[in-house]
Amino acid sequence: MDLALVGRVNEGVVVAFRGSLPPFFGGHDDWSVVLDWLNDTLSVCVEDPLYGGGVHLGFSDSIRRLWGDREGRPGVHTAVQAMLDQSLLDRRSARHLFVTGHSKGGALANLFAVRAARQTRWSDMAISVATIAAARAGNAKFAQAYAESRIACLRYELEGDPVPHLPLGPQTPGFVQSLARALFPKLANADYAAVGERVTAGSASRALQPWAGARRTRRLSGLLRPRGFRLLGLLPAPVAAHAICPGSGYDRLICQGEAACDHGRSSEAPVRAKGFALR
Image (cartoon, rainbow, N blue to C red; front, side):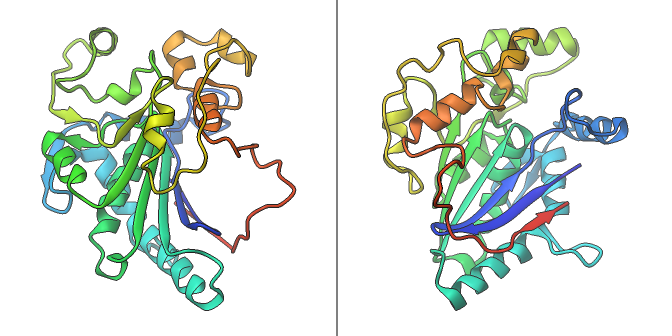
């Protein structure tokens, strides 16, 4: 149920974490979906000195499984180091770590970045994180430790998407609290907090500029014009707001903030080496 992809581009090594398995349209078997969503609901916040604060029990357990080698397959740590070693030989990629993920994958990206920043062998390497609709990975103490680290983080969020405000914390807006308690009446408040610089429709140009991984930016005029993936119109508003498919709000937010983005249609693809798919 947990999956990460590791590969190289000219700018550095990229680690991408998959989000929660969708309960529909995804083609995944029922048990995988159930187990993945049960992992999401393990929102007990546990103190962990590795992260400098309290972290989500389910998400931290996912990173633990993905980090190390298992059953003869490399973990994320080994895969990243292999890419860095290859870059030393062919000099085709910069020594820079880019980490990303959507939804649960965004929370995993933040936890992975903290662990990566603490690796002695990677102490000279820049770490840039871009999360999309990321769930919260830890409490206020964790968020403070994250802010004091060398990680440069952007978090893309759209108004109306409840997931970036979960698990609940002091800054969770009222509409998300009402929605969460309608589904889980006994749900209690916690101390979860977001990390990184928030990027939304009005802030993208300003927020992208200081980020180490940013390219040219432009204003996001017309971001919410009704175009794109029409199936979103059949979904409840909070679900549609969370979508990351082509033509979704997040697709437009990210790609209109990156003026050079063409969804991979460019005839000149960046130099790539063989990557890893890690489960």
